[in-house]
View 1 (cartoon, rainbow, N blue to C red):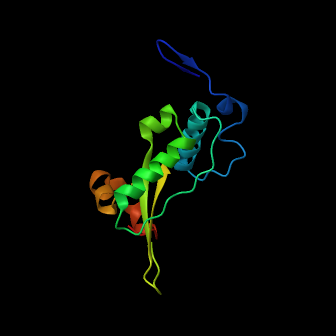
View 2: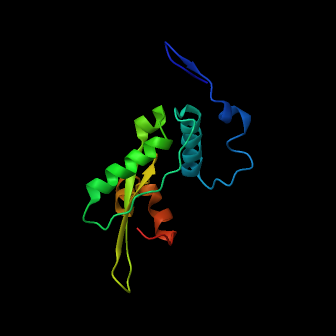
Length: 138
């Protein structure tokens, strides 16, 4: 339940099904993604969701394609969660054979940011050993 001075909100899907039990979440990032998604769905103002297709561009008309993608996204997704943390990620794919470029804008409520290994070592020397033994690229 979330309470403010003027409103009280109960999120049924958070109380009906346990968030942490019997789910394939691997880390806190996935748990947070699932929780934000459930909050968004509970607060979604759109009930009759129309079918939409994501527009695709070629990299020369990004602003146009992004505007159209956001408009289509808001036809199905309109909540306080989206208002506060919603955004879009641009992806670009180029065919190595024919050179065709495809650019798409995908909605997201979270963004993962990698912390460079050197920054971690400088701020927390105790992690230096842990980073030295991992095989993850930086």
